Amino acid sequence: MHLDALPGRPRTAGSSPDAASGPGHGTPGESRAAYDQAVQRLRAQYAALPPGAPVRLAKPTSNLFRPRASTQSPRLDVSAFSGVLSIDSAGRTADVGGMTTYERLVEATLPHGLMPLVVPQLKTITLGGAVTGLGIESSSFRNGLPHESVLDMDVLTGDGRVLRVAPGGEYDDLYAGFPNSYGTLGYALRLRIELAPVAPFVHVEHRPVRDVGRDLAPTLEAAVAETGVAFVDGTVFSPQEAYVTVGRWAQTAGAASDYTLTEVYYRSVQQRGEDDLTTAGYLWRWDPDWFWCSRAFGVQTRPWLRRLLGRKRLRSDTWWRLVSFERRHGIAARVDRLRGRPDKEYVIQDVEVPVDALGEWLAFLDRQTGIRPVWVCPFRARNPERQWPLYPLDPTQLWVNVGFWSSVALPAGKRDGWHNRAIERELDRIGGHKSLYSTSFYPREEFDRLYGGTQYAALKKRYDPDRRLLDLYDKTVRRR
Image (cartoon, rainbow, N blue to C red; front, side, top):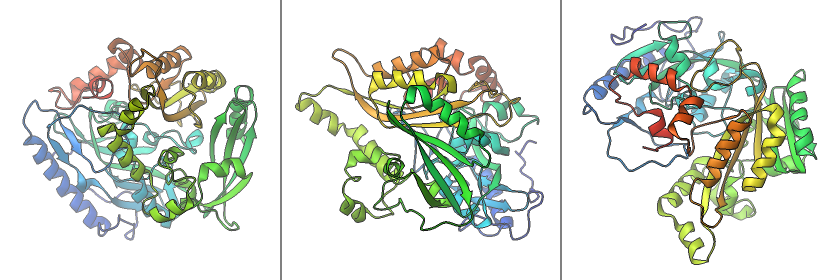
């Protein structure tokens, strides 16, 4: 369906009159009317932009670690597309603005006893961002990635149209090519997604692994095969110490642990064999300390500092703002030089490796970077017959996402990118793939081979023929 005319849309099938809408967004009918008006305004705003100028979104937050060149290019105001339009409790679906953060989305769905099938770990990740990029979490071994639970979406394309995009529809090619396009084909304004039922609590078990190279992959495979398991992820502290965390829904619990103030979740993985968390506490367990990256700011060993900051500031976006400030001004780098320390390179990546290659990959990563801890999360495609051409992974096998986020000293005479490029080469050798939210150094030919260059060119020609949006390679490798 083509939405340029934007007729009034019927309520989602099966929704009830009391279906919830986002905070401050009125009733479902009012939300939809406001949404339709916002789309009209956005199309007019887009049409008024200078031709030939690259178009970007004006967003208050970002979870990208890809520095960009300074630019004065126009910015689209998409703030009106933040909020939950409606929730169909019986049908287990939600209509959601593309700029809605998962924090806000979860706040709306949990009172209905529901959650998105996959909730990325950081509160300020947006639904549209997780779909046009890639999102993953500990339910992904069962539910795949966020784009796999999208039933339909409205996309503002590079040529200024607003299209209703759904699997099997007229724009099925855009539906399939949207994941990993990072806003270079269009922007999701509204998405209808599947929801899953929840229980009040999650009971977790942290299973130790003492020989990571030999035993981690089999332990992950065994965990995802167990009956009744809702969540699986893992934390690697060294080649001799890792934990596979297995979560199950629970209707009751003792005193649920709280990792939003004085306690640090990832430390509990080493200290507790079992634990209970509220559902919200489990979904956001990594956010207060940005996994473990908050340790760079000295807050993990100083309970008084954590209390001073309080729950409102112990959040991933706080640490993101501090890192962004540092990257803009290079204060730590200047101090290191004054002290005669080697230059450092940011190595902030999430990669996907076949489960059979996990031990080999982790051994290489430890030798190359020494980054510890490392996060691991198994996943597989929900529908083995659906292909996603810009991120072509074998849908029949179990994959493991490996997340590693730190800065690493450069050897003498080596330039920025030396570690990351070594990672890219080794990843390709073992048949892996990496997300593009962070820095990439691929030559163009290699990039096109890995990320569906032929299919991307066809999509670009159909949906952004005048190239008003950035090219994927320019955006993710050249960092324009």
